[in-house]
Image (tube, rainbow, N blue to C red):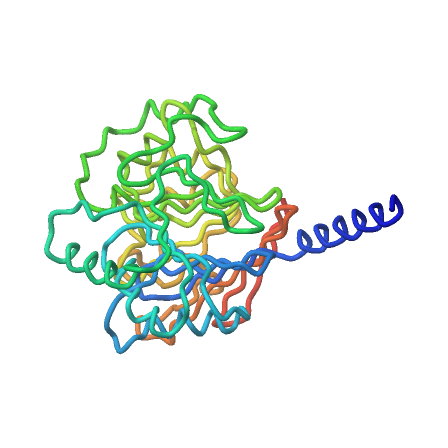
Length: 336
């Protein structure tokens, strides 16, 4: 009996070690200035963060379904809707027609007083009605097997206590201007920190500066990260320097469009972040010109009229990150 127990424990350890040896895979799907980021954990469980735009003959839903097929998954275990603007939630109805969605995750009811956002939420509500739905608040965890997914912002609130290893006084706060109040759904974005072994990823949706600073000042409640999904497509209204520089990311990816996001000042702030090895872009930002765009190898779609190429990431438990440009096959590996 003891021998069997030892054998069973050894098998469990071997299986756990093998699972941890598998990379976390991420697909930054081009939805032309919206967001759709597919994560596939080593366990095989998946989460999609946002669904891109409605319309366009189902363009974004098709690109997401194609990425899921490439990833070898036949369903989405979680679809996290950060907020109810059409470039984030708009693709839900079309996506649900193409692939099974197990559980929807969001911050609760729409809070924005606009006809467009009310319509977006109504269309989303029709899809999640009768399905599994998880309404999250700061401090909650999304139970995605193989990853730790911590909610740090939701419905206009943020975590009040630092995450493990964070909480240091942030000297950058003294020089940070007081930003205006934002009453839109952007400020209610669900933001998450995702941990896999030694690797940490930060995605704050479209969270705007006043809420970002609640996470960064006077103490940095997030700590440092390895991969930063540049907030709000790289718009000026987000990416407060006191947050961006405090998290000291090694790699940043911005899901901008050719003429949406990638604002020169926000781009510069991320580009100058201490510890940053490289910034990757889904599109060449027309507004930025040559001075505020990275080299072509690091841009998935250099032309405005494009094929919608993605950026792919394989992240190891030891913190190693490999980023690949699907347009060219160019890849670069970053060791922790």
